Image (cartoon, rainbow, N blue to C red; front, side, top):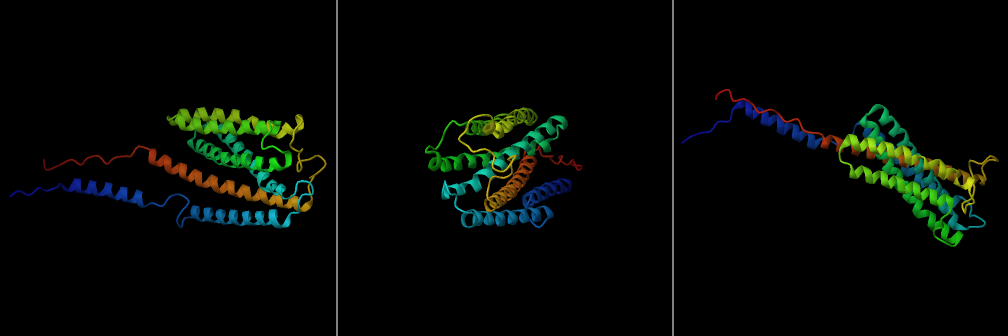
Length: 267
């Protein structure tokens, strides 16, 4: 009868590896748990929910019905803030892309990628709500109006940015290529803004950033500003969650440091 003894050094190494795996498995994800980051995320989520509730109440119950367009004009309080914050998200991509090319710090690449994803969510909302508003007012869901066309091109550019990120697998090359595309794509944002000034457009001119002052009644302007605040909080919340997820993805993709095999001193 023979008894096989496992060397003590090998038992200790095995225990350490198992303990490290268990700790990695049981570690809470970023933004959750009782830590300070999780608390900030929960506070931001509550503030976002409350501001959205105030926005819906103001848009549906407090803001007056537009004299010409009727109740369909209430889409304005969702459509316009989503467009503004979507372009803000692409502005963050622009700044973070420049910062990455200067510093080569992966943190800036994660910020650019996360903001691009959230920005595409907002601009997709704009692309959906616009036709719903345009059909009763213009008689068509879509027209190749300068504002519509330039915004559609902007949406396609950032869709292409996300496709490029999924196509290039090598991290450094992906970050460099996407930074260049993020900078070039942002050049369309000023074009979207000035399109209604430079060309004849179905869209009305600026109703807030107007040289003669806001062209809205006080109650409508107040609800619009609440919408901007609510969508800004939603953007910050989604951006924070996406960056936390990107950090976890980077940690999981990093090569594991295996424990070296213990030497059997009794051999």
